[in-house]
Amino acid sequence: MKTAVIVFPGSNCDRDIAVALESVTGTKPHMVWHGDSELPEGLGLIALPGGFSYGDYLRCGAIAARSPVVQAVVEAANRGTPVIGICNGFQILTETGLLPGALMRNAGLDFVCRDVPLTVDNSQSIFTSAYQAGETLSIPVAHHDGNYFADAETLDRLEGEGRVAFRYGENINGSARNIAGVMNAAGNVLGMMPHPERKIEAAHGGSDGRRLFEGLLAAVA
Amino acid sequence: MKLRIIVTLKNGVLDPQGKAIQNALGGLGFEGVEDVRAGKIFELEVADSTSDAAIDEMCRKLLANTVIENYRVEKL
Image 1 (cartoon, chains in turn red, yellow):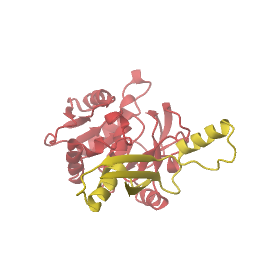
Image 2 (cartoon, one colour):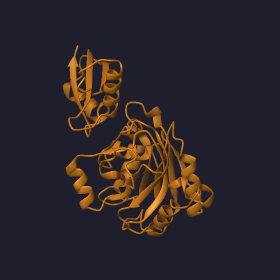
Image 3 (cartoon, one colour):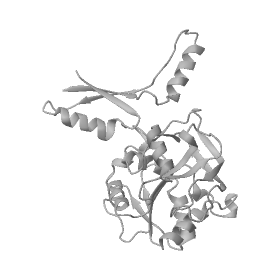
Image 4 (tube, one colour):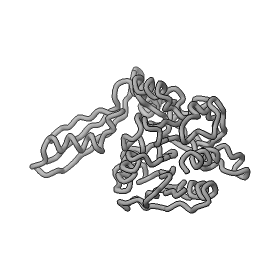
């Protein structure tokens, strides 16, 4: 599967996700610079990595969401290309409007950096097909602004349409209804604060994250 | 033309930073601070011909995230 990782000034998980994608797909991803306005043809996945794009100026992900390459990502997503945004990538996806809601400062004001229990809410998506619904994973988080906010009507709609992919097993950041990851209505765009790319092999202390990419590869290829 | 754009959190959106500032004021001995909401102010110098519609678009497209924030424009 051909994949691309978008690299912004201030991205710092771009190489982690590149290693994870190469390990699972057997092919090196295209690393696409934020100033590019075109994406490679025939992509099976576009990844927006974690980090602090543009120094998190204005709001986390706000400037990145208006960069030329992200306009191309939005168009690709609207044509059905799978897109995953992890951590800062999730913040960028909400800022583009591809995903509803916003990520705000953690309720406890602390930067939270540790493994957290993560429950799979919906195993019917291309991103979660290798998991069982209700299964609890251990995946690391590392963020200051992961407090998911959306109005009650939007939250009800997300839950009603099965668009909550993951929830925290404990309230780590004040997120509404413990939501850790959500999908768009078409199911080809996922944003999540936890870092599956940091749990790919035994040396990482587990491989719960690997199955996300394996399931995606099986679903898309 | 000088613009001042004031961005504030919508009612009902929790503001952990405002809460921390409120607690810090209490810690300094200021009593009766019942609530603090943190926001942002942008001062822009724009061409006099800039239309209200364009100013509004700047706010909606970038300066404020209307999912969580309100904005108000003052012409100085």
